[in-house]
Length: 388
Image (cartoon, rainbow, N blue to C red):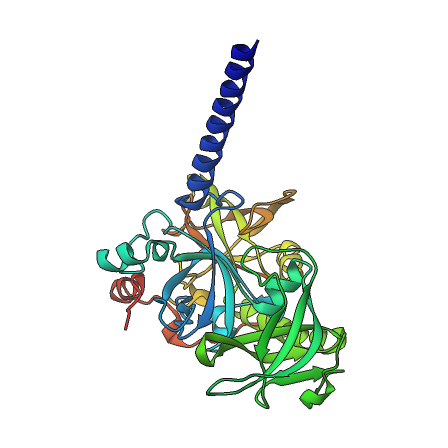
């Protein structure tokens, strides 16, 4: 009986070990998932990373994050379906001020884009996480925390000590524990550079009182601390800032068009055919509604950076909406909206897995020429990020 029990325990440990190894393998596969054109990544793919945005290439949607004083920068490129949020509203890399502390989800390069971030073997050996250089999600602190039901309760002010004493705001988290978040009481640097928002107005930091529930944005502070750039004392003030960013986003996309990729192509003998497109996620619902109800949207081809070939207003094809479907529970990066269009002319970029942009009933806007891909030389130059 003792031997049988002993064997049973060994068997149980063997089952647990096998299950644990399977879980580890699954976790590693998700972490090191390689995205493919035309396929959205599975839930949980990649790694979480946070740090300050220290420079940016807004045309190609790239930049580096600095996590701490001595940590190497994580250079990133947004995946074509990568989403950005600022003040809780849809955004673009160009909307994020330098120095803003960001949270992101980063994957290995999409297949075919391995040379976008030209890192050396020495860099990768010292910091293997730098391989995860393509972002599917990028958010400032207020977007990151509010999306997951997190806010902060003010405990009070404290005067820091040491060789460079600084005023601190003591807070504790309210809400669920979250990956990559600060899940315990914390001290943040605060000074007169911090913008304190209350009832759509800027107020003095003395308006911050114990027991208030607040939201914050952060930046790097001295000695690798985190310092407050903005603190919202009520929903009214945050809603006002969010609406300003939303309107900025609407203005940008209405002039650059909604991005997506081609799911299927059906050619006809007349040189035209049908194109089925899935729109990328992270945009304001108003834009999807406007495009979905447009009987004759325009469509143009684009690169993985979302830059279009030549001037997209002039070189787009006017189509006819045949069908609009909305998929339930779309994966991260997808809007779940799929459109089937009849077009009179097939362009080179209208191929399965390639990126396109669709124009709704929006006003004609003349864009700066440096946003286009006007030649093969410009395309090649934009393929790789130039590191300092």
